[in-house]
Image 1 (cartoon, rainbow, N blue to C red):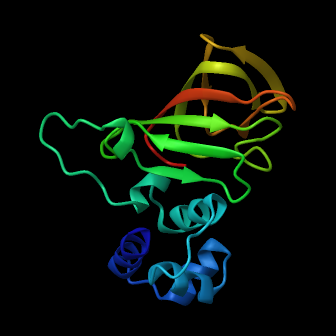
Image 2 (image 1 turned 90 degrees about the vertical axis):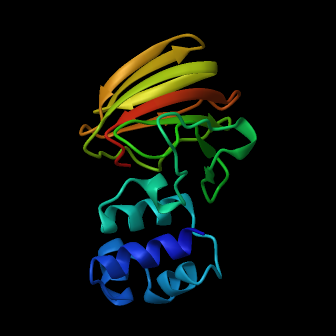
Length: 178
């Protein structure tokens, strides 16, 4: 599913597998395997490919076609998990338009990314369970269930949890670009 979408976006841009691999800083063999659905890429790899193609991460997955109203059932949500299993994102929104809504689950002692990173968006985060540590520009804020924050995603940021407990949160991103 994701392989066909990547191949379609790559060819629409007139890029070769080698060019995409170079821009995404991954091997040509990996791009080839992903496009043929022979391997499931990690969240970090999908993120690199999305950046190289200049598209939001979740746009690499088949999009739900809809009318004026699109319903996304919990059991039908698109999910992406990190290679280490530390974070899982579940797409709450339909995956089209200028707003992306995700439910994130972070395991104890995990982070959304190895290092803070930036992308051209704005985010609003609402913690629904546990404690989430939000790092923005080297500053940390601890959010409990019910707490929320807004951040300019152009500033390097990431989400973390403490060693003993995980967290679940809702993040709204506009425009989608992660």
